[in-house]
Image (cartoon, rainbow, N blue to C red; front, side, top):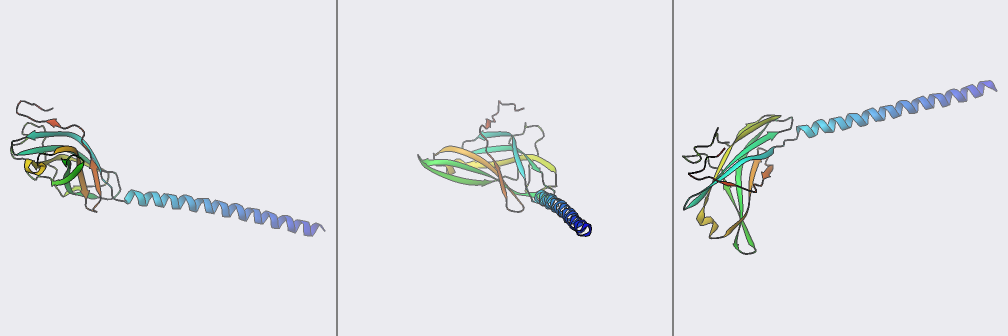
Length: 183
């Protein structure tokens, strides 16, 4: 009689220990899978763009925009800026918005000559993992494109080497004129 009770107790104890080992193995594998997903997510290419400063200069035949962008790569993978564009949305007729995309200019010319530390952000520009690059992007908008329409908004769009886009929307753009001494 005692022999069969001890066998039953031993069986229950071993089964309970097996359950504990199984549950702890499940927990460890769950946390390992979660950690692997986080590591994989950190490898996913991503750029984060910030607008530091902006100016517009009005000329008789065109508007020249300058945007100081800071582009950060928070991921574990190297990336690059493939292109930077300015999207201008304007109304040709009330209620009929049109968007035009302007590529960034590769030269400054004599424009914005008084801006401190003026370096153009070229494309392509390498952005290593966990690094930030900063530079000015210039855009020329001919007045003939607007056709007398009113501008509704702007968006500076950065495209990375994977074709992913990130944008910033400037709300106010300071006018740059001969009498202006920008900070």
